[in-house]
Amino acid sequence: MLTKPPEKQIRAFYTPEFIRVYQAYGDAIVKDIEKNGTFSPPSFSLTRMTWIKPSFCWMMYRSGWGYKDAKQNNILAIDITHEGFLWCLQHAMLSKQHPNLSAEEFAKLKEHSPVVIQWDPERDIQLNKLDYRSIQIGIKNEAVEKYVNEWIVNITNITSECQHIKALVDKGEIERAKLLLPDEQIYPINQYDYPYLF
Image (cartoon, rainbow, N blue to C red; front, side, top):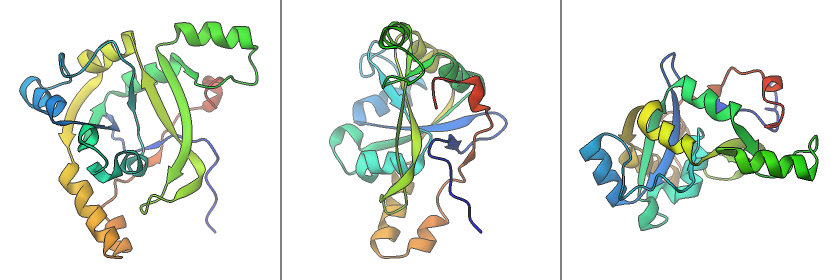
């Protein structure tokens, strides 16, 4: 019997060396990555919040499989260190007030937090909304600097692979398409170590 995932649970593709997150960007940023090996100014701003997403299907929903608009026409698989990912969780606050915090406590913590967490409905391969959620991680200030300069292990442009999966979905070959999805597993953390994220 299949058990329903809890409403909030971190799932990702990961190895002992890294955890994979996804972002989608336009051509200018990707050209600079090819040149410099990572995100870099002026195409990429180190002073703006940027969102990283461990869920492949949620990234496909957000970017429309790379077809949504010119600013998201390159889908990137970004492998980052576990240390970096856990640093994000340790320094994060929810985007909405946590019930265990007063409005004043929440505002103060959020103001000084370099990481913001949202839990958005997970999506299936046809981008239908599921009844459990996927983590979205917004990083800013020192977190962006660390992400760009310390945490990234590898960046791969996976746009063509993503659009191949979409083509199979469009033809109704759902099971073939599912075979090409990354193997996302529960990420092994104790949620009680991160009381304001769940």
